Amino acid sequence: MVNWMDPVIMGVCNEIFKSIAHVSIGAYLWEAFSSIGFEWSLLRRKRGFKWPMLVSTHKSLDHCL
Image (tube, rainbow, N blue to C red; front, side, top):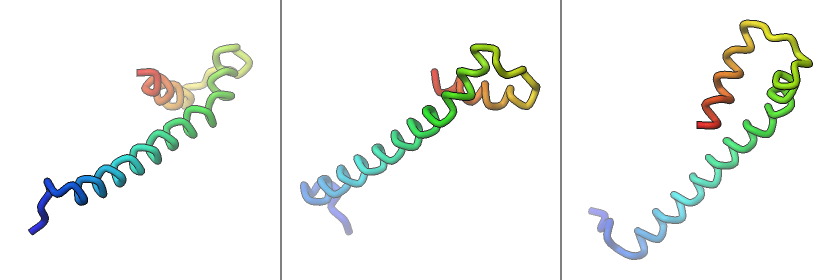
């Protein structure tokens, strides 16, 4: 049986959690920065709005929340 209160086990779990957190934050930032050109063109009205773009706009609004 694993002793979850062992300092060595807690340290390993902490390192795994930090790695997963860094990957998750990196993926979030990658998505936000890769779509910023599209979002900016919608805000500047250089791209005509079409209904399929609603999915992308809704996704980016979720990033703000």
